[in-house]
Image 1 (tube, rainbow over the protein chains, first blue to last red):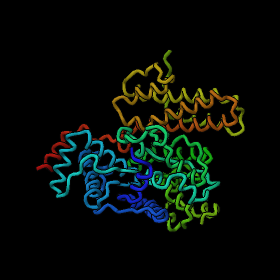
Image 2 (cartoon, helix red, strand yellow):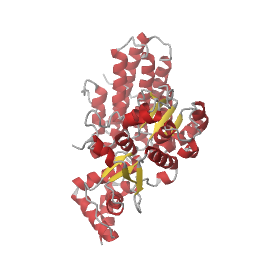
Image 3 (cartoon, rainbow over the protein chains, first blue to last red):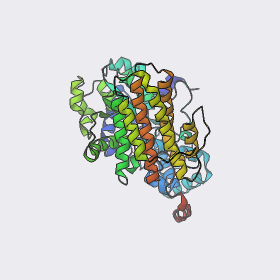
Image 4 (cartoon, chains in turn cyan, green):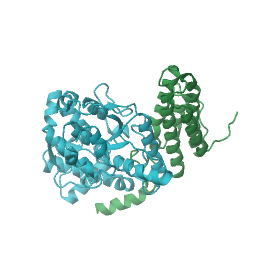
Length: 314
Length: 161
C-alpha cells in the first residue's frame, strides 16, 4: 500500500491533459486549474503533442478507435512527457482514458487494434497499467487535501451555499473506475463527495442536493434541445430549492450545458433561475485569494462577477 | 386490478402540484401521503417504460422497494437506463426521510426535493421514450451504431491494411 505522503509527493507533478473543451468553451476551467496549481505549488506538465480522446463522437461510431485515440494520449504521457500520472479535469477525457485503460486490460481485440494503429502511427503502443489517470478532484484531494486547503483558504468561502453537480461521466459506468467505492476515503459512484469535501474545507456550506449525478441531456443539446433544456431546468430549480446560490461543476460539458440551458429555459419556457454556475477550480481559486480575472470567470457565459463582489471575494 | 396508463404530461403536472402542496410552512404531518404518492408516480414512470418495451412490469421489490425492482427490470439489456439509477435511489431516499421522520421540521422541503427527483425521473424516461439514444451517447459508453458492427469491422479492416 502506498503511503499517503508518497502519493502526495508523486502527484505534485502530473502530466496535464486539458483536452479540446478546455481550450475552447471551457477555457475558464483550464485557466483556473493552472492558476490554482501555481498558487498551490503543484506542477503541470502538458502532455506533449496530445490528441483528441475520441470524445463521444468517435466512441459511438467505433469504440475501438476511441480506445486507440485515448491510448495514444496515455502513450504520449508515459513516453514523450515522461510522467505516468495523467490528470484530466474534463469528465469526458477522464472517462475515456479510464475506459481505454479498462478495455486494454480486459479485451484482446482492443489490444490488437491499438497495437496495429500505434505501429502505423509510429509511436510506442500503450499497455494497460503503464499510467494512472486521475481527475482534477483526485489531484487536489491527494496532494493538498482538506487540511491543507483549510490552512490556505482561511474559510474565505464562508456563507456561500453550494450545490455540487458532478454529472454522469465522472461516475458511470462504474466498472471503469475500480478505485471508487472502496469505503472510507474513496470516492463514491452513487453519492460522490470529493468536490463537496474540498469546498467545505474552503469554508463553503454544501447543500443537500439530490441530483448530483443526474442526466443533463448534454449530448442531446443540439439534436433534441427541449429535452436537454427541461432536464437542466429541473437541475437548476432543484439546486435553488436546496437553498444553493451556486452550482459547482467539474466538467466543461455539464458547465456549458447548465449555462446555455439556463438562458434557453427562460426564453423557451419562461422559467428564470438565478443560481450561479462556477467551476470548482474557480471557487477554490477565489478561496485562495486569486482575482476572478486570473480564474477566467469573465469567460463564463453566466455573469457571476457581481455575486462574487457581494461575497467580498474580489 | 389493471390501472389505466397515465401519460408523462399528466405525471409531470401532478408532480408539480405535489411540490406546490408542500410549500414552505405547510404542516409536516401532511407530507407523508405526498411522499407516498411521489413514490407511486415514480413506479408509474418506470412501468410505462417497461410496457413500452413490451414487457410486464414486475410486482417484486428490491431492497424493500418496487421502484428499485422496476428500475432493474427496465435497465436489463439497456445499460444507458442506468443513467437514472441514482435518480430512482434518491427518490427512495427522500421517501424514507419523509416517512421515517414525519414530524421533522424539514418534511415539506424534503417532499419538494423528492418532487424534483421524481420529475427528473419522468423527464429522463419520457425523453428516452422519444429519443432512445438519451444516455447512450455519454456515460453508458454504448456505441450508438452497435448494430452496424459489421460496417465498423470493415472500416477497421481498411485501416489495418
